[in-house]
Structures are given as structure tokens and as C-alpha cells.
Amino acid sequence: TMGSNYCFMVQARDLAGNQSGWAPSVSPPCAVVTNTTTPAAPSNLTASYYNTNVGMPASLDSQILLNWDQLKVNTVATSLAGDPNSISGATIMRDLAGYKLYRDVTSFFSTPLVIKTPTDLPVGVQSLQDPVSACKDYFYKVSGVDLCGVEGPPTTVATGRANTVFNPAAPTGLTAVR
Image (cartoon, rainbow, N blue to C red; front, side, top):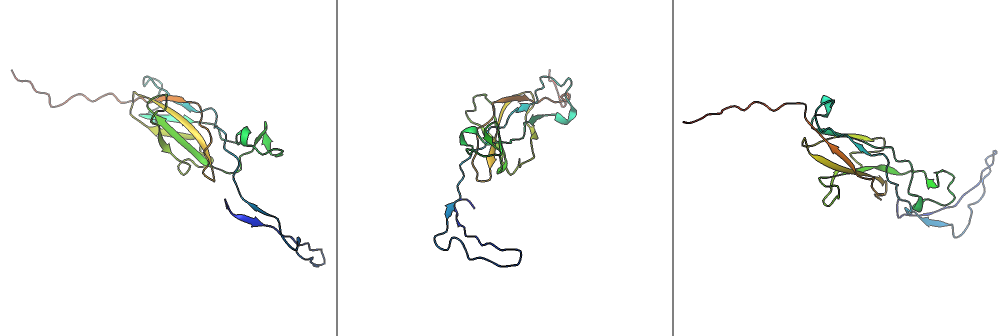
């Protein structure tokens, strides 16, 4: 558990069942569990973009399809030196809780909304359909969050646009006075 202090002592036992005393017998080594790594940014975030409904699947009516690659490593800057389990110098991600997804109506992300949290997007989820208003651009970023709640840097911005496969209904109840 994060922040907990753990102390260690060991005993040896042979095949005959003989057991040694505890070692060390005094002042066992102790350590406080800390989190020193930060998730890296997920890669290859894409958002569907339909300017018209031509070629748009009906399943994406007023929805933007988002995809990104599974996060596999921590940032290189916070990776553990000498860790044999690394990819290009970055420690393999062992404690990913999930992803946090942000949406904004401007590419500057001046007032982003968190639309999904690691509870909504746990490990293994890298795709999502976001229901939005059609014919409007939306901007997205996604970041990884570890089990300690440490959030890594976000992806670059992906722009999406939804459209609708339905034509507007004809107006009704129209009257004229002369």
C-alpha cells in the first residue's frame, strides 16, 4: 500500500524441515512504498471526422469514434535505472489503472471537460464512441493514470466531427394569414 512502511526478515528451511532463526535478528531493513514513475503519453490518438454523411457508418450517427494505442511504458524521465524490463529505456508500465479522456470545443483546451476517467476507461479499453452534437468540431486528448492516481502527460490533440445520417423532418403546422 502506498505510503506504508514494510520491514523484512527471512528464515531458511532445508528439505528435511530444519529451520534457521530469523535474519537479521535485530534492526530489519525497512522501506516506505513510494511511487516514483509517471505514465507516458498514450500514442496515436485518432478521432473520426465526417464533414458530410457520405461514407459515414450509421453506427456513428452524431458520434465520434476515438482510438489510441495501449500504454505500455512510463515516461523515460521517471523510469527506474537499470530495470531489465524496459522498452527503449522506459520502464514497462506495471500499474496502469486506465485512461482519462478530455474534450474541448477549442484546440487550445482552455476549458477542457474530463468526459471519461480510469473507472470508465480501464486497462484494455482503447476505443470509445463519444455522443456529441453533429456538424461541430470537437478536440480530444487522452492520458494514462496509474493505480496511485498519478496522471501522465496527455497525447497531442485529435480533432473529430460527427454528422448525422438523417435528413431533417419537413416542417409541420405552417399557417399563413392574408
